[in-house]
Image (cartoon, rainbow, N blue to C red):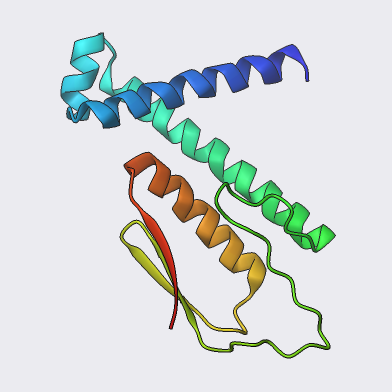
Length: 138
């Protein structure tokens, strides 16, 4: 990794920590920025850059997963479930997945790649907001 990439990664890490601290403080953005002497537009710039970096990373991961047809990058607390095409699934009932305040009903024919990306994104949001997650067979 070159110096420019390391610098960008470090900067994004620092900005992410700043936004987490603001979220955990419960303060408004205006009050938080005033308390640390940061202009609000700088806060929003950093927030936007973090979102752009996350979107870029997710896009690359999705592209790589589609190209390799593998789902090896599984978020913590999740598992890869694979079935042999010759074996009939034991349970074809839909599964209800709750991540934080979001509920997803998953049918047997649901696209695994899309489901993976949706769950991964919701897990990140879940972790940031300290929600709980459950999976229930319907």
